[in-house]
Image 1 (cartoon, helix red, strand yellow):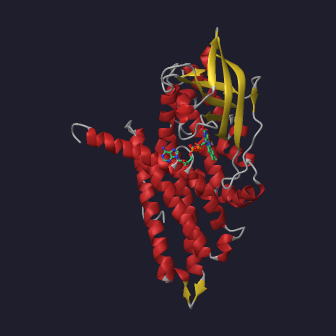
Image 2 (cartoon, protein in one colour):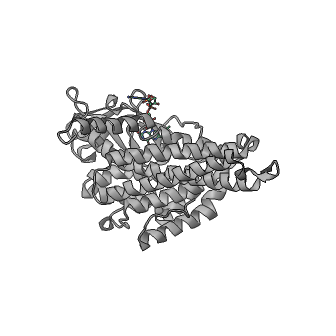
Image 3 (tube, rainbow, N blue to C red):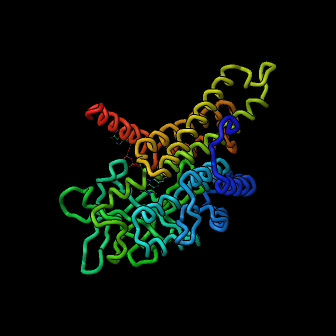
Length: 388
Ligand SMILES: Cc1cc2nc3c(=O)[nH]c(=O)nc-3n(C[C@H](O)[C@H](O)[C@H](O)COP(=O)(O)OP(=O)(O)OC[C@H]3O[C@@H](n4cnc5c(N)ncnc54)[C@H](O)[C@@H]3O)c2cc1C
């Protein structure tokens, strides 16, 4: 399906894409079924991502990185996700944790944390709490100033890469009253500090090779551990998610491509009533629709990444890309299950696995409902604007 349309990528990005493809075909793809079955975090894949440099493409040159565009990060995320959904999600989690530092960190923070990230020590993005997922402003974790230090207390949940990361960007309330949006601050927290406890690992429906944990905090950090400005943490979280959603869109197109690859191959192979099932229009047309939606999702995703690289506001385009691409992945995986028939309902079958893997794409980093909310609010603002 990727033959019908290809993004225009510069030579350097193409070279990185070739590295990702090679690792995907030879290492990540062959391991995907085992990771899912055994619910195992693939340290060997992480090592390959770190050693090849794929995990840190976005790190600026002045901090020792490649300083590649979001377009390049997305191209690689798509390719890795196409081979193994879990490994793609791990790669995306590395980027999500790093972006608050990239967007708002001091040079000292960038040098320390991005340097460690290039050596494999990941940072996780820790926003969600029991009562605060879609409604992120409802967070209850507090940070109270005590002299030069801040006492952070609370519990985060569903932290992507949580148990594998060394650091966390933790969003905590720093104002007892007033606007929570203005009264939230981002802090760097070291897993090795006293009072940082992980004691719950989620057992998930899909992307079972990823590590998703809680993070209990009763700990102290220094004033220098604030990321960005005091009181501007929620803005930073949303700015980060604007980028993260485009990366999730790339994970989605990677999984959609994998589902189509599998579905089309099986539909061309399997015969019923004297014909390949792709020749029965009920199946062939469904695959045609999925191929069209996946191609459109890729175009939208690359366009959103390119808009970000040009410094444009991607809050709406990114929401559209994530919404459309995650739903395209859902349809492609659902169709693949149907194409495989009984086999598609039983393990081990790639369609069955992808059907479970894709489901989270419609939930994390803003559910589909939240993306529709973001887009519809913007439509309302347009209608009410003088040019509306
Ligand atoms: C595998 C995994 C990894 C994750 N990784 C991270 C991470 O790294 N860092 C992090 O901070 N969080 C992470 N999350 C959390 C994730 O972002 C949240 O689960 C998600 O935002 C949804 O929040 P919630 O689970 O509290 O659901 P809720 O907010 O309770 O929503 C439940 C349902 O209600 C709908 N809903 C809520 N409000 C509205 C509304 N206004 N209009 C219409 N429908 C609405 C939602 O769309 C959803 O369908 C992860 C989650 C998972 C499952």
